[in-house]
Image 1 (cartoon, rainbow, N blue to C red):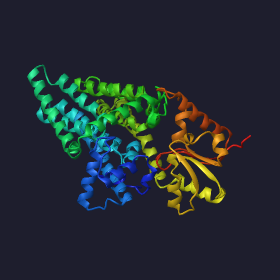
Image 2 (cartoon, rainbow, N blue to C red):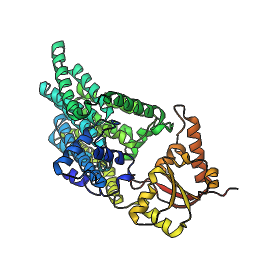
Image 3 (cartoon, one colour):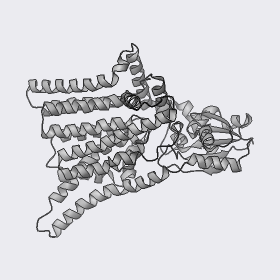
Image 4 (cartoon, one colour):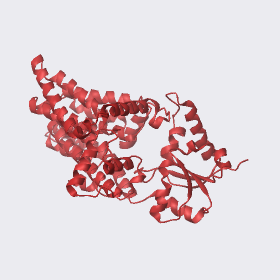
Length: 488
């Protein structure tokens, strides 16, 4: 409940600021499902909307309702961590794992958006809890719990299919030697998963075109994983996700893995399946052409469970005589647990503060004071400059916008057509000029053209105003305003 109330803070920003929220609001308003993702989030929002009698035509009210439901799912994920670590080790470990998840700034951030990440993370965390329950008490009840959790994950995102496969592997490896028992547990598991999938999707399954749309969505997601988000052709450096894990916790990966050392004599087949499957997931993620920090969050859930258990195990092993070894064990356990929490909490405080600010509003104020009304601006789509100007009550501007400003033409071509300024965001241009990026998936020509556009703009244009990228990115995407270089 504390996590849920915290996640409800600062939900007033316009839905247009987030690339994905407007399409979800439209689906609730129009009653259709595009099936770019499974529909658990949308169906839950629609159920709550009907229960509250909320007018679906109020777009911002629908968006805020979606964010509230998203916050509830994220709070459920934190609660599931309590169960997972509690069943895996002890109540103390469960409480600490719940705290680690509940206050982590990455989870705080995604809990603020009408987006499918939070029901997926709730399914992932419940799956962890079910796996730990199965480890302690294998049986039909635990298999049902495991199937329900896998069903929730798959009903939220297509990547939840991995949890369906992991569940099958877990039951097959740990259910015992008898083929009959394995078959029974797998049947119970599959039935529970099918129940959730059917309950979440029964309204769309009557559409004869549903399977074609699902197939199209899966092909689209696969294409983006191979060729970059929206086909930009970005090549993601393999170490980037590992570097992000370090940046999020300020702990080297080896030290994070070191949390398994105190538990080494306690690890069994269930732990091997859970840890091994997430290691494979992280390795596969590092080989894709699509990057987002939120893709690491399922790994963080596993990290929190085992880190909390390790801290409690170090405490348990302290010698009773409280000599120097005992004090060292206590200090090691407490130090590891506290430090794992320190940087995420620091970032949580910063993220919460920045939710109260809006770099687009600051840009609009600068434009009003410093840039003449006759200026013509080219803009990346996620600047949302027209929305920001309207929200600030300022005069409209002549704006030419595309997903990437580079899609509008070359710098010289824009200048010839009368464009005087360009507004771009780090979230867009870093795909082309960031460290280690490069063309992938046969998109070399498009990628090179975009890279040249942003390189010329940032190298020869005159920087008038900038705001650094920061969390939350929806309010601080890293905006830069340039006067276009002269024709000569």
